[in-house]
Structure formats: C-alpha cells, structure tokens
Length: 433
Image (tube, rainbow, N blue to C red; front, side, top):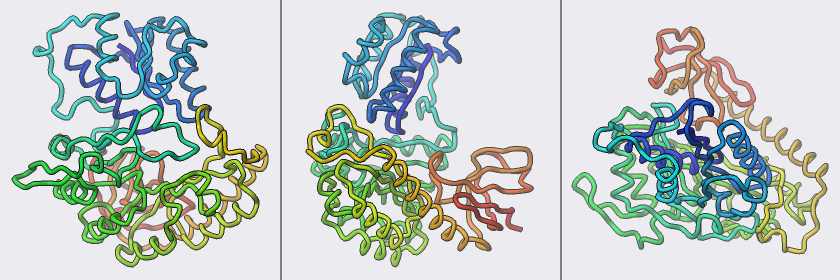
C-alpha cells in the first residue's frame, strides 16, 4: 500500500492514525507507486494552491499506479475531485478513518490476521523517532472569514484528557524527546467537554488547556505548544514556561494588527491588547519565543492598514513569523464581504516588505544569543556537523543550530552548546566544553 500525506501537521497525524490501523492489520507501506497495490492520498484543501497540489498528487498517483483512494480536507468537496479525476476508487472527508480503512479492505483485502502482526505501542509515525505531533482536538468553533476549516472538519471536538495523556506517555516511553501539541485551537481545549476530569497517574486531570500543559510537563520531554489563541487563561501557561515545565515557546496566529482588518477577518482576539499581553508574557518568561503567522492583501486592506501591521511588528518584536499573501478560498465568507480585492502585485510587495522587516528583527534577536549556552536536540548529521534545534525552534518551520565538530553526537540526542554566530534565522554553535 502506498501513502501520500499532504497538508499541515494535523493532517499528518490523521495519516499516522490510518497507517497505524492498517499496519496492525498486516498491510505494508510501499516505498514507490510501482511497488504498491493501491495508493491512499491524504489531501489538503485549505487554500487554492493546496487544492492544486492535492489534485496534482491524485493525478500522479493515478498515472503511476491506477488504484487511488482519496481522503482528507479536499475530500469534503468530492465533486471538485471527480471533475478532474473521475476514476478514483473512493473519496472520504477529513477524520473519516473507518471509511478509509473499509475502502482499503474493499479494494485490497488484508492477507494477515491482526493478532499476528506487531505494531509499536506508539503507533506508526511519519516523523523522525525523536519527535512527534500530539493532536488534542478536531475542528474549531471560530468562523474566521478567510477559513473554511470548520466547514470541512466541523466544530471543536476535544479528545478526553486521559486518552491524550496516555498517548503522550506512550510516546515518551518509546523514546520521543519532543512532543508538539497541535489542534485548530489549542487553548480552547476541553470547552466542549465542559472540562471533564479523568484520572492519570493517580490524580484527577481536567480537560483544560492549563491542566493539560501541566500534566504533559511531568513527562520529562520537550513540550511545544502550537496554534494557541491569546485567551486570558493563556497567561497561566506562561508561568509553566517560566518554571521550565513546558518549552518557553508560543505559536499564536495573530494574522494581522489593524483593528479594521481583524474585524473583517472575525478574529477572536480582535479586541485584545496584544502588545500589552506580549510584554507581560516576556516579563514572566524572559526567554519566551513567540511565533506567529500573518496574512497580507486581505480584501479591503489599505496602505494604512498595512503600515499599522508593520508598526505593530516593530513594537512586538516577534521572534519567528510567517507571512502569506491572501488567496481567495472557495466557500470562504471573505469572498462576500464586499471589500475591494488587493492587486496581486501589491500583495507581493507588501509580503516582501513584511518579511524584510521580520528578518531584521529576527537577526537582531538571534544576535543577542551569541555567547550563550543552551540545550539543543539533534535532528540530523552531516559528517562532523550536527543540525539541531533549540527550544526556540519547531521542526521544519523555524531555524536551526549548526554545530561544528560534533561527529560523536547521535540523532535524537540532546547536547549542550555555546552559540558562536547568528544569521537572520539560524545559529552557529560549538559543543560546550
């Protein structure tokens, strides 16, 4: 069986769950289209470019193999797939694990009995062995006008806290050194469960963002929090970061700074004084790294709105940022706001200016780390050079720490290093002696 996984880390976790189930039933994962009897493509449908990538991947799988099952976010729009690829065997939406497995059974019956096959306790993972994503909920209760995730994945559905903590514990026992907590809205965790408590390690734990972070902090591994909205109760978690219980790293999708644009976006944090909150967090946890993503060129964005965003970023001094040009998404409420579209060349120019400023800020903040010692996690080796990450760096989206003369280190191990140089996004280091 071949498997193609596209999209965000949340989709990657979906792929891992499907693969774990199928592997337990005796299915092997083929390394190429030619060696596969069937291919599953887990798609993304968030923005137009992701839709195009997914449709191209389906087409490639059909051309190279011929037997294709489609799942994931784009599966919520089956006609869009069938118009381009009517020969696919089956289409299911996101989180439809049982339907995917049933379709695989139909078109490629299992040859082995499940009890004869061994699967690691932590399940099948598509990440390196030393880090893993932990998805704590599905869906979202917000209705941001640029987003169609709720229409594809539904409202917030949190996993019971006991189930989440047991999975995290299995990961730690299996040797995972870093757990990255993900969802559509991590800080809303447990709202739909009314914060129902369950026992774990002989203690009742409430299904609440703070309680979850506190419990995960007992595992003795790096805990990194992603997709956090700046609700007031997030302040409590900053105290856990200051105490070293979870990594001092916060991924918050601010998206913009203009009050007018935030209102048009229907962002839940539109009324918050985010600059004051950021300053308060840094007073509590001075080493905190704040990452965020932004959209430029949203319908109706004026030059003044964009300048407000730049001014905000100059004050906020965020450590890590990503920036996207607004792309119309079929079915998004932003299409019906009656606001004028921003020309493509203007969007491109604004994104370039935004990223130029963010690079200057990043370089200045990283330069302050020269001479400091820190713990890093080794991701890969290139001869006697180790490519690692610090507490400030999430895999694949943030910077790296290059360690010279590190031939004795192993992937997945921690090391103590001294920072010797800094660029716009990455650091250079040597082993601490």
